[in-house]
Length: 234
Image 1 (cartoon, rainbow, N blue to C red):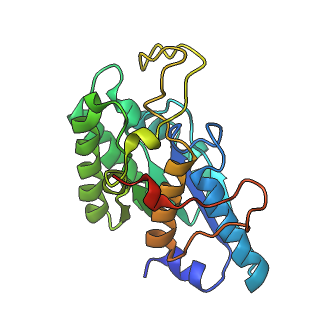
Image 2: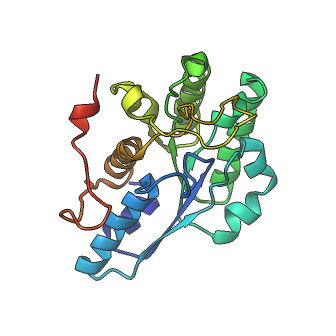
């Protein structure tokens, strides 16, 4: 058992850091996948009397892997987390995808995290609504699996999980601005950022495979309400 999970199961204080791009940024929708993790962590805090599970979100909109390498101390190591939950790679497609650089940078980031003794949970970027990038995202998914094996990290295959679903039901947000980098215009469907159903899928996969937990809602209270995911499958 990895040290972070042992601490988690023993109800010891645990510091979790989220590193990623806008898929992990807390601004795009709620409930977000990090919201779900925070809810179930706090729920166990309340009932089990643990001293606390803290989630720090260092995700940055538009960030590439290189940005986290250049700002590793500020964004990751200075927080001294027990475990890093990492997902980067979608922005490596802009302006054009370089698979060699992407893998080299990702390998360097994995190595830096392992080098300072932090556990790593790495989840592969999900497919996008725009099929133009499907092959590139699949390549990144395979990089994650290979590097997780190399560095003894926990691999969570969100990419393959998303393939079970009708993506037109997971990507429903309409842009209100002109995204020049991604070449999306106002009123078009945002093919990069999934809706709350997509975030529930991400959270469910990470919770089960990285923390051995099930998601639960607050019985209709507020916005933390689970949906029946079967309705969204192909």
